[in-house]
Length: 228
Image (tube, rainbow, N blue to C red; front, side, top):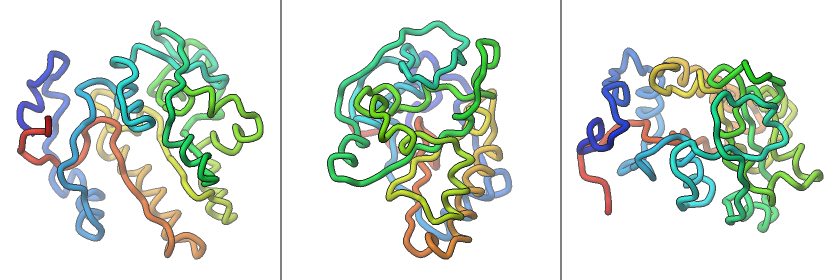
């Protein structure tokens, strides 16, 4: 993408890596065996949480990582100062609920109970779970335990044939491929684990579609200008 590294003030050379089929073997293999999205562009030149909001609602809600969700499972794990806030926009999860399509967000480390000194990227951070910013999704005790579960439950649910219609899966920061505290390999491993579990399942391997979606601008780049 034009000016990807130098296009904004927060960009550095660590934001971009050239990975061949040796250092990103999994992604090359999946792209060859399945398909890769063309013309993929980051919603905002900003941080993870800002782009998570675009994923959840399709629009801008706040800048960078300046707001933390008022999630009851936050457990004091954030080691930075931010504003606690809730939002009331309609999310893709609300639309699923409206259509009676059941879903679960599996977050790695969700069942941890970290204290204020045990921080992201090694421990769960509710700020990285976009749906927890919305009271319509977290204030329903009937749905809460179904909609928000620990990543380890994904595998037991697959084995038991209990996956809901839509599953979101998100790893810890150390598995996010984020510059400075993760690697491509770490992200590939957790993606491969999920893919292996689905393809090994007699229940799900023939009727499941898997999307690998970066919350920022990961993936293979087209050297073209982004749309206006």
